[in-house]
Image 1 (cartoon, helix red, strand yellow):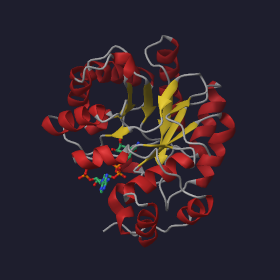
Image 2: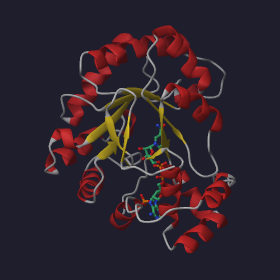
Image 3: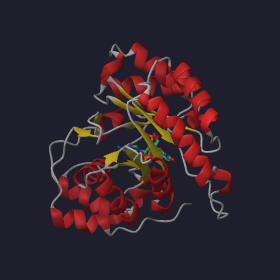
Length: 276
Ligand SMILES: NC(=O)c1ccc[n+]([C@@H]2O[C@H](COP(=O)([O-])OP(=O)(O)OC[C@H]3O[C@@H](n4cnc5c(N)ncnc54)[C@H](OP(=O)(O)O)[C@@H]3O)[C@@H](O)[C@H]2O)c1
């Protein structure tokens, strides 16, 4: 697949094909400086969330960067624990106020259920549908340029689409070598849902994988660059995070090499080491 610097969502909105991830970057100096540096190094797409607690510093960095508002693609997310029509509207208002903007480029339902009940089998279908109706209204009012979900599998996507007839523009999921999420990706494609790949470096676990180290040597690139390039060549939108200036720059410098088809296939089959 040809690598592009922007994808076009099914509503025609253009979205830069690499986003700067900001999870676990504390509000204040760290979030401000890393976001500002990312913008300086060519990222024009910033991924934050109410749950990250850093929308204020991320927004201030965007404001101070010298870019015009329309030159930066800003994503934020509604907390997984907060669901419902009015809650979504109120939380959206708080998010744009913290970011210091008057619209968002992309707003996501952070997860189909609160993190605390993630594995107890309870589904939140009705609550997600009510939330989604608020998202659709905000979109139609022009307050958000595109709307989507995160951590949704087909079992969560289907009822949302059936109940409202409105297909999410984006689904942001955990996706990297070793976690290729075939079922969700295959479900999304025919609908035109763009798959964003969060934790494209497996939050650091990928650095221990020998095959990835070999690929980095073979292509004379960093392991992170190989992982990000793999994501792009597979048609996903990677969201690498770093607070380290040299890594921030390295992670977006992925345009001058190409991974062969057979190496892409080999990378698909990687098994991630367990969390330690
Ligand atoms: N929607 C969701 O539920 C969800 C969940 C998780 C993540 N996300 C999004 O996806 C983004 C990325 O995911 P992530 O934060 O899990 O992590 P990630 O991007 O997979 O990995 C980040 C880790 O790798 C290190 N790193 C980054 N670039 C490197 C390089 N070139 N060389 C060596 N090490 C490097 C970072 O270290 P340093 O920072 O110390 O440099 C950090 O420890 C998040 O920030 C967030 O925006 C979304």
